[in-house]
Amino acid sequence: MIKKNLHKLIALGKKLVSSELTIADGGNLSTYDAQTNEITITRSGVCLDELEVDSFVSFKLDDEVPAGASSETAMHLAGYRARPDFLCLLHFHPQHAILLATANIAIKNITVDHTYYLAGKVARLPFIQPGTQQLAAACAEQFTQGFDVLLLAHHGCLLGSDSMEWALYTALNLEQAAKMTKMLGNDIQLPECPSSYLDNLKQSGVV
Ligand SMILES: [Zn+2]
Image (cartoon, rainbow, N blue to C red):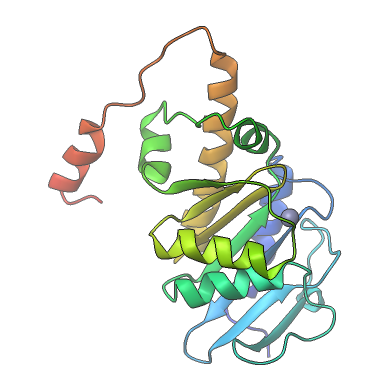
């Protein structure tokens, strides 16, 4: 039986690569089914724009990780344990966001879209060896604090969401905000999108 949401995840992988949010086999994708307590995650070494049903492995959250699962599975497991509200976790290597995270330059929320998807949701982590329990624990800590988008210096981004569409739009806005922050350079002082924008949206019941 094809797991729930798998086709959406396959389409999402294609979009991440076609939108230049990662290249080659940089990253891994997973989805969590709370009803069956099962995680479905990409196999190690698969290219995100060439995913098929066979590119994934599924197992219960508390089972031993099967051979062949992504080398970064620990990070995904820690993410779902910290945030059972997550339907999916996307890990990818977006070049502009990585550059700024590594330089420890904050990504500015310049447009209303950046603010809508990213304001108050992004945390930066220093470099931690990929694939380790140490990285998994550091990610879990940030997710527990309520951050949804984790920037990993010298590495990439780990992003969790209760919606595949929201996850993709957040990834796209993150990289666009990073590009625009870079375009601006250090010399020009630009205010971020007014915080009143989100306050007004909340008052109108949209968010
Ligand atoms: Zn990675």
